[in-house]
Length: 327
Image (tube, rainbow, N blue to C red):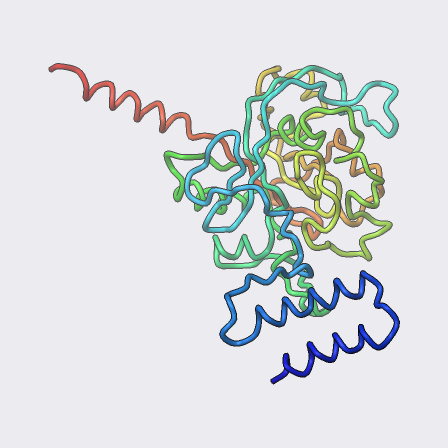
């Protein structure tokens, strides 16, 4: 038997030769214990796989059924992960002396927001296809040997997104409402809850986002750069993202201070974040772009927002109140 030969050999080596170092003796003893535990008929062992990758990106508890304010949530149909962004107030826009600022980023003003969920990443091609059974993207990375699933969906107009919202809202009616983030919500989230940051995080911009200098002339897998302090990826770079507001150069002088959304009659909507073919200045959190509602581009995608369906919950409370009346 193996042990009958192995153990005496080790003992004889220890008696006849020089004394084994203590570390070697401990290693030999440990090896014998593992062999004993794995030998047929031995007690059941629970092996520790130290080479397994730690799943740190998904360590927080995600609910796939009920969205609870204050907690992250996974939408079950698409598989999208949504991060909870606590409400608060911040200074929106750019100061007059800010580097790279544009005239439509003024005046610097205070905005207060309620809490909301925001997509951890830009909507991917796989997620779009799960919901709408099609993939409108212009960039297909399978031709260069990489599956498309993790790449962001692009080549979608502002109007195309309505189909996605309609499908998701029909599924979650009474719980949450899906929409595009407003400009204020998007900038607040990009700044990790209103912090005074130029880009979506404190690392070097090459570590935070994909843009002209590092993108190799195409979009990249979502979440492959560093997240900001809220755990949101690609808020700076990769794709521009549609938001809810109508574009107006003077919007900041006209919208309110509490949960503002500017909706004018212009045929242009605001886009945010910069994309893979832009210079670094376009990736600033305060930067505002715009595009015609019907246009589609290979560097323009979407990130979804969700809020509690307050109207449905209020209607339910009213119904329950009526049922308790004594007549």
